[in-house]
Image (cartoon, rainbow, N blue to C red; front, side):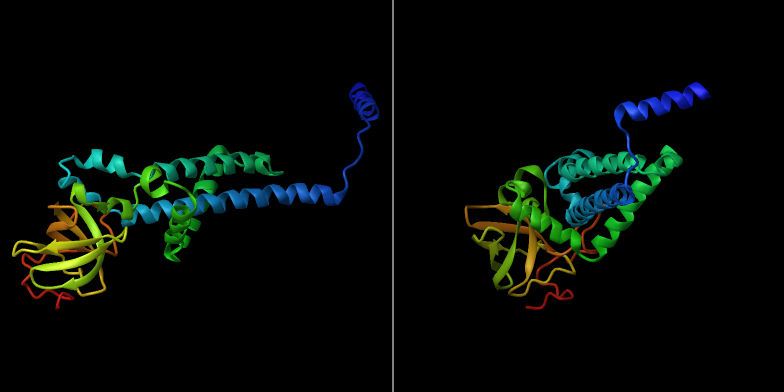
Length: 256
C-alpha cells in the first residue's frame, strides 16, 4: 500500500499533475450530456423525416409496375434516413458511456434510453409537422435528394412514363381535365367511365391530385385512377377507401 502511494505521488510530481478547477470539471461533465442531447435531437429529426416519408408514400403502386410488394417496398425504403438514424444512435450510445455515471448503465439500458429518446422526440416532431419541413429543407439544400438519394412522394408521382402523374387542376370537365404537374408542365388528362376516383379526391379546379394511368404523348395522359394528393398508403391496401367506379358518379367532394 505504501509503495502504491509512493508511486502515485512520484507520478504526480513527475508529470506535474495539478487539480482541475471546478468550472472545467462542470463544463466537461455537462458538455458531454449536452452533446448526447444534441445527438438525440438530430437523430429524432432524422426519425421524423423518415416517418413522414413512410407515411406519405404510396406503397401499393407495386401492382401497377408489375412488381412484388417486398421488392417494391425495398426499392422505395428511405435508406438514407435509416443509415443516418443508426449513426446518431451509435454516437449517442458511445457519448453516454463517456459521462461520469455512464459506467453504471448496462448496454441494454443505454440502448433503450437512446432509441427511446429518438423515437419519442421524433414522433413528437412528426405530430408537429416538422418531418415535412425537414424533408423540404433537404430537398432545397441537398442536390439530388429527391431524385437519386431518396424516393419522395414528389419523385414517386413525377413519372408519367411509368404511369404516375400528379399536379394541380387548371380546368375540369366530365371527360377531361387540364393540370400543371409538379415540374410546371401542362397535361391534358383524359377521363372515361371506368376511371376510378377515390372518395377523398377533390377534382375541383385548383386542387392537387395524384393520377394513375398511361402517357399517350408528351402532353396527354389517360387516367385510370385518381387519388387525393394528401396522405399516402403505408399498408399497401386501398388508398382512400372504397373507390367510385365512374367519373359520372356523384361522390363526396367530387362535384364539379
